[in-house]
Amino acid sequence: MVAAAAGTGISVVSAMNQASAARQTARNNATMAEYAAADAQRRGEEEAAAIQRRGAALKSTQRAALAAKGLDLTYGTAGDIQDQTDFFTQSDVATTRTNAGREAWNYRAQGQQALAKGRADAQNASLQATGSLLAGAGQVADKWYSYSGKSNPGLPDWYTNPASTRYRGGNIGSWYSSGG
Image: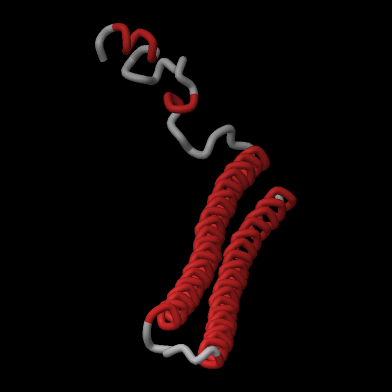
């Protein structure tokens, strides 16, 4: 009986530890996903800044070359070339930031999935603990009653022995067939 109680206790503690570990692992995974998301956005901003610098350098080179040819930088083809450089630079910057935002969103979604899985795993472990506790209690009670010499835990004879004639003057089968 003591061994059954101890085994039940160990099973319950083990399942509760498993639930706690599942929750902690989920929190850790979500934290790491948030770090990855922040890193993705930081890298995206760094890349966007680098694109802007390259675009500005290209535009400066274009302006110097066009001015060396004696062209008016604000009019005609010279102005159009600079406008296109600005447009495509900003387009590349926007694309880079959008891609970084999507990557960050993906990491955050993974973090939320980790939390949801952790909650489900913890709940499952808690249910296992409850099941172990109930099963163990039944085993301990059974052992207790068998050691005490009782065949049942004080339940009426008709409950544990359906063939008992002490149930309404007859057996259960006849009681049901007569319409109760």
